[in-house]
Length: 431
Image (tube, rainbow, N blue to C red; front, side):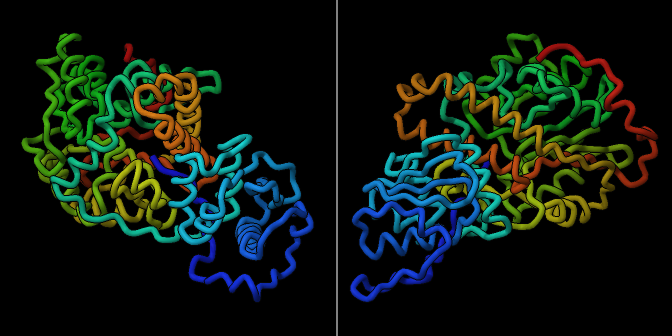
């Protein structure tokens, strides 16, 4: 999950010496409150106003000086509490904003999500300053990256996820659907897309807390081997499988996708490709080709993506998702599916479903903010609030997409003629 693009200032430009500076007049300069400001402050405000022109945001400095960035009524005021933070917003913008928000050196008064939406729209198409391409995740690095995010503790995630601990995009078939019902609908939707039949074998790569694997076994009568490298998630999934009497049909394996063995009728991955790294896409495709039935094997890849290649925000890759990368459809088709000759059966974009999912996660997170602060610290709460809010803003503005790609062997003629089976279907069972 994945933060909004924050203002990318002209960090390569050095501020002129204060003794010789003259700030060029700017359309919004008249909004400045005339209080003591030195030349550097005025220059920084002018550059930020130019970069974020049109955003429904007001900037306010520690001494009360402020500037509105657009003509519309601001949805939020960003308060910068010291000069170092102000300068850093120009020189290391995304990283500087995230760190300042987390530490309290910068605060947002008003609607955080709408503020981030406005900034995103103002910066549409601009690359992140200082961002780097994701590195190839070795097995050791992949395990470390998963540990950083997913092993924060099941008690933490249980506070704000649904009752089955599904940490991926839900599927809402109506505006009043609860998160629990939407996550159950997503699990069943995936199963219908996979056309699962009793007695089949399924491999899941990156299984989270096990909700999909258990749903497939319980409601569709299949046998599942689910791979994961998060200690906390595996412990929870195994305990739940035994508690529900599914231990003989679902096996949770402490290995990553490169260690997958055996054969299967269907292959599924929900929210894992973002952690694989582009350099390993060919390896993932090779594994899928090796394990899927050569005649009727099919699969589904569910992942956060982009319309054009772009690295992640550097604050996200440092503090939330190390080495993450959201692929384009072209990345997935060219580097994972095409080399093995798979045919793309269907592509669906559930972008707005993820925005609604994140809205509900954030509301539940806020309901438990005091508890989370006691579990960790207030800085952690602010950091995760920004992560969830900015992810929601990214999906609302189209900066991020949520793709579901179904694929099959090229000569498989057993697929349905229409999509009727996806929608005219009674939902199976419970979570």
